[in-house]
Image 1 (cartoon, one colour):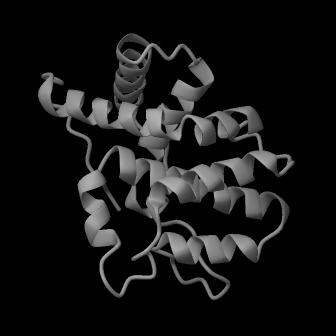
Image 2 (cartoon, one colour; image 1 turned 90 degrees about the vertical axis):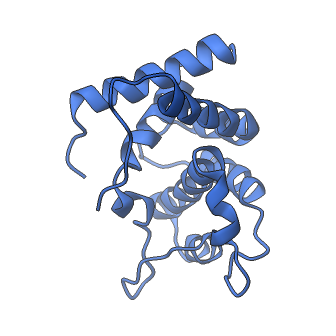
Image 3 (cartoon, helix red, strand yellow; image 1 turned 60 degrees about the vertical axis):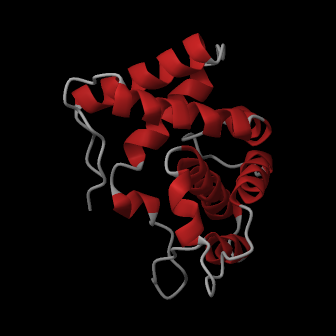
Length: 175
């Protein structure tokens, strides 16, 4: 994904910092930066659905992503688990109303608990030692243990951008 415009990066960083520090009392800059980066990365729907199976098919369901994670090793395994954590945190936090449709009857995700899978995925990712510098194991571990708080914080970020007069900036998905 091309670098996000500086204005959009500042917008999400400011919203996340304000929400997590002021409203929730979370003074954890690396965690807040990770949340801001998650919002920036997931502006592009190609980033949301970037995990592919061995035949190159894009995976849209958490159950499929978890099966794919089990087939990988090292950095690749960590990255898929991390993505599952990010994917579930994004949907449970920012767009929880979409979960019912995503887990509809007949879907492989019908019985998947996104929160539990997200917590588990972050924990697994935090325990895999790799050269990946994109996310520290400590941050991934904190995301696992503070998942519910982070999901709530993301709902609050969304509430703010929808209700608090953001100067006409409305996040949207592209791609």
